[in-house]
Image 1 (tube, rainbow, N blue to C red):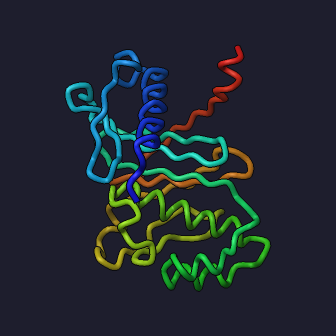
Image 2 (cartoon, rainbow, N blue to C red; image 1 turned 135 degrees about the vertical axis):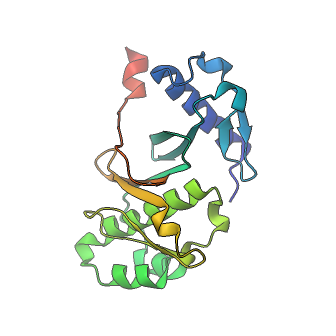
Length: 202
């Protein structure tokens, strides 16, 4: 699924704010320029990006998560945990057989968090790969336990992929769940939280 132009612009503006706030690029936010990969994913143009920064953005119900890495491919996804979802029906349709079976065995009071843990881990991975939803969700498996470390367990088309990617759990706010996928071995992840509405009022 290729992002529409409005989605591209929103992602670019959010990264401009992030880069300006943290001084990643050393240039004013309004001067940052972007190019777009074939799948619509924005990246900073090469002549402004000596650190080879990569970024990805996800948002749900008024909450946005911005992930930034140097050199490595990166993907992030966040979802609001909602009760009005046919978890097992969607899992049977979109998830791998292993994931569906594991989800079916979960206690009912853990089903919502487990479903969204699985969903965000899968979305973060395919966004990091850059293949979008053209990469079949059922062709790879991730761990589903929201309270256990996130892992990429298998990719049917690439048996060695699980050793080349790292997954991380994110809990950006109560009632939400997210995941981060990064190319290469695990490293320390730093997190910051901002309330932009509060900052604009101040």
